Length: 149
Length: 149
DNA sequence: TTTACAAACACAAAATATAGTGGTATAATA
DNA sequence: TATTATACCACTATATTTTGTGTTTGTAAA
Image (cartoon, rainbow over all chains, first blue to last red; front, top):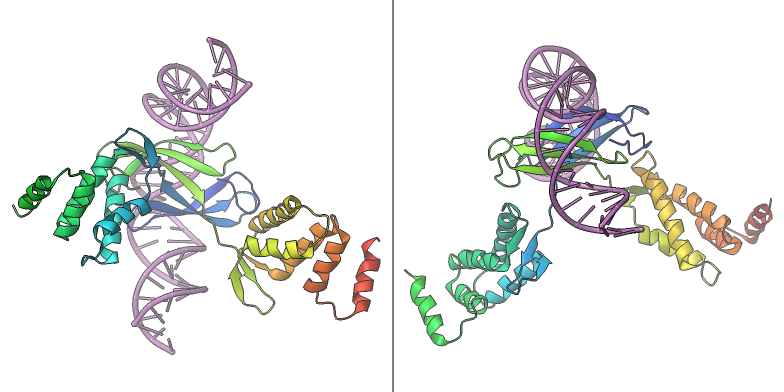
């Protein structure tokens, strides 16, 4: 590992500690040339998450886009911004921990529905109406009837 | 190191290679629980560069601020924006490769002077006049006299 | 000011990673 | 299409890192 001070390419580890949740490793290194010490982090490669849309086109996952869709479903409802952020966070976490690096937008939609269902029924129905493209009132009614089963 | 798929905290290294310039190490790991494999990178901690000002107050280094000071010194002079950007880049590079993570603003000033001196004398004098707070015309003259020595 | 916590430091035994060699597959490029 | 570069994979001997325990220090919070 190259020394950030003198750029010499070899250094040795003198201490190594996993982070509390083991999501990274902090190492303390010493340059073999100038003896200066520095810190490094080993982190999991972040694979950019690709979302496959209905028309099969692909785009990189965008948390703010996800959040916007949640916000608009919750408009005027008693759902706090914090709750919405949490939903977005949880979904992002779920996606990033899914084994794939490509996820279907429909899967994300289902995840949002699942979360909203437990928080606000109106927001849930609204999101479903957009997401599932309800064609007429009967589908609405059907979804609402299923809600309390 | 936590498995990004199943979140199990223990994994083993199965391959480890330094990058071409030794600025990072890529490791291939295998989760001890789910056996899935993933890649990690060990990178040097990026220490935010702190600038110590004349009054001893500290702030984080801001390239755009540095650039602004160069731009105003070069106002109406034949120095291209590209040259100014290059000066800022070179100084930032110098600072980030300096052994310290705290640098004195006076040091940055000297670096700018050094660069300007080779490019445009008027810009140089202007920057010096602000930076060194010339009190009267005699200091100006002195600096100008020294310029072509 | 006291407390609490993270980071730096030290040391040593035990466990694991590193780096050489070499093969395969894939993607980007000429 | 041939070429190149990169990632992934396998195997092995040896050197290095890891991790427990414990001290110290700087800094943030109470």
